Length: 230
Image (cartoon, rainbow, N blue to C red; front, top):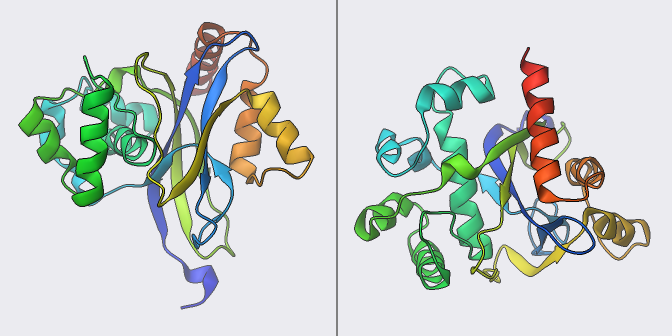
């Protein structure tokens, strides 16, 4: 197999947002420099879909309607798996759990569980009666890694508000540093050579840097997404 024959794997990325005096901030993490794909780069939490993310049983543990999920992403089936993967990757890599009534303690428990059982997230949710807040995720964009990369992903980007009371904690495996930054600050760090960024991240940061509040950002990007579907 040549590098141009690399299979494209489905993936999901989540952009967590919170307001600040400087405007909306996003949660970003630095990938382990030893990672084969974009090692050392600062990215939004995310990763490839696990086959278990497609389990129809998930629909009992989230507030997502399957037909609507498929329609939003333009897929014939299993659209819900991208929402599940985005939430799973966020708690695994950054220690934040998007679920009804979840607190810091439960988020830490979920992160620890996933570090030991990465394909059994649904088991954790069943055992702990966790209802994921999939309805809080707003679809933003679609990116496909170009040919020539050692790994390629078909990635869906989502926006979501930060759940107050939960603080990020990186896994120190896939992510080695974590921080809240304004999009403008992240871009400035890239321009001065402090941070390594990849094209989808740069384009997304530029897109989000236009807004003064999270409310404005979510409203305008939601309207733009609806306009594209018409």
